[in-house]
Length: 272
Image (tube, rainbow, N blue to C red; front, side, top):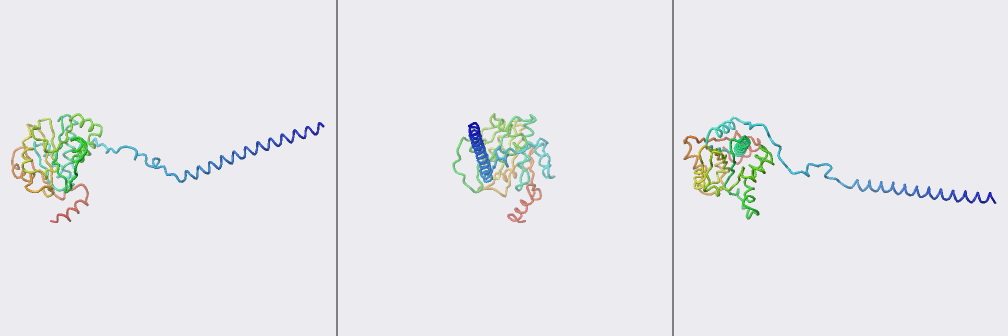
């Protein structure tokens, strides 16, 4: 009887042990299968953020802290003219650095405290297109017209500083039509860009805003006017060329620094 009882207990123990071992094996197989399935599923998933984390951040141009350095002799002459004259005309083809040099000098003057405000303006004329109704306030509507200068200022001052100055009136972007009645005093650096799209009447209105010791730069390419009729930029240069405190700097096609391709493109569009 004792042997029989012992045999039964042993059989029961072996059965329970085998059952437990079977459950453990099933559990391990299930885990292994789950891992294989997860690995298989993961192999079909492409995690974009892991390979391009910078795409999740807002774009901000690298800030340049060093003073503006001319890339050509023509640019150096243009920079000297802006520093030494009340009114400077910069004319010539695209890509010569007319806008960049003027914007960078304005940023340096604001940062150093030599001026208190930068005014950026240009005629609200589209280059052969009609943008139609633009949503938002006046500043939002006009922002598309001064976007190039916004990039220059961000690069020279930093985006945070530019945003602050725009909110507090230290940097002002306004259409040329809103210049009537204003006076540019000695603490203001004013840039009129794309001036080839002004009429003589608009240019006269703008020029008569100039106050004592202010710094005014007028840029444009007379050959790329988008308006019909007389050109205000060409008219002003003809009238004011010999006045004291006024300098006209003309860039040539060989002064293009944007890229060699731009020079070749202009050669095809404007031969000779």
